[in-house]
Image (cartoon, rainbow, N blue to C red; front, side, top):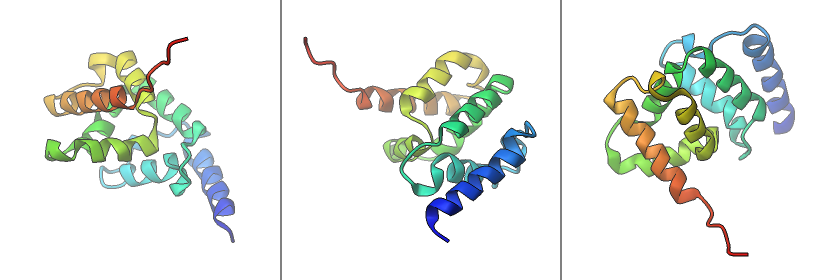
Length: 137
């Protein structure tokens, strides 16, 4: 079996278990949902974000904005010295600009604690550094 075939089978299983049933991935135990989420959204290391997963996440965040905060808290717990490394890992899940969009969309509903607010600020700073300057015309 090749890796693309395995990715496709995994994506189909995810669709059947989570998307088609409207299951909230974040209802899994805290030790489980980050692994499942990262593995699926990062498309099993393909280097390409899975657009279907991003739509699923936004749908879940629409119902439960606090899950965005849980996601950020999961990536950014610990010393600030590693914030950029964590932001790069998070980038495999979703483009930093997309995460900033979600932060703007859900606002305080997603930002329950000071730790989550610090994590959101780290993502915003990382996204600003990732922006490509617009060249003069």
